[in-house]
Length: 191
Image 1: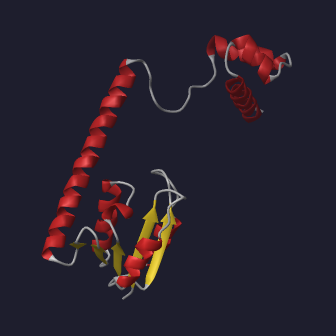
Image 2: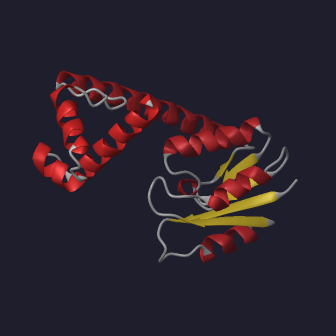
Image 3: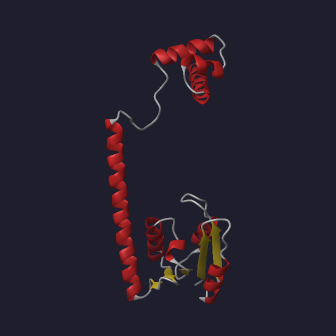
């Protein structure tokens, strides 16, 4: 039964010293930390802590918002802790999942996270519907065929380079390079 602490700051010019001090004072034996900016930033400290957790361990954070990237992420982590027999507490928020009040807070957090999931699903569906109405469809790009494909193949066969092809066809150089690469790949598969 190990007591883990987790500290996180959002930008490189901040530090975790105060959080780490509070976690050690709260009895944490091991403290993991991350300096991350942005929602998708790498979180090696969190990943290492999660890999180290076992039944009977505990996780402590200074504030609830330090644990997850979003309410949804935080709720899923706390739910994971509960399912794995790991206790959880947040010092400044007064949440201790092992108490009735803490259990209530975790339940509310899970409800809010579920609500957030449903809102995201609803917005995604509405966005896809709008995109389709405007003639935009997701998925894999279509094969290069029709008049554009014929013209591209003709220019490649005549020895034109991608920058020249871009000017001739009216696409960006990057797009021309992608087309040339795709056509070359198709041809190598045909042989």
